[in-house]
Length: 208
Image (cartoon, rainbow, N blue to C red; front, side, top):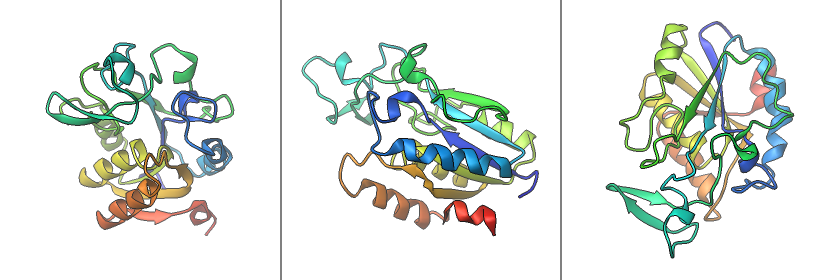
């Protein structure tokens, strides 16, 4: 590993972990793995879902709609979710067991109530930019290693955007878990990432 490498930790927040509003099954199991691999990196950043309570991705803000339904939101197909990661709430906090001591920056996303934001780089309309790409470029980063939650949404879109922006992108497979609204979503996400040139590795990569 070198100064040109960065670790991106995506959305390891209480609401995405067991007991949370939008829990990823076994999501807590990735925390020790993420903590262990952080020692390999000089540059570590994290993303944080940070929604206003009135966010229109929440099913509760659409009377008669339920989580899992899909609507058109300003021309974009939008999955409706349970209320989660509301700004200032416990559910929006990073898990207490996650080592945050060497993070250089946190990039918050999902703050515009009219558009969801899966990727750590852009919102889903690609009109809102978090500043993550500019930050990485200023730091001289050429390779990014992505982990966190959830594999089939925020992790996938962060990795895909990173690759499309010219970063050599790696997904750390044992340091992510899928929501799996449909049973095969996680596997489909892996295949999509692989087809776009993202390299699929696991944490043993850092011991070689």
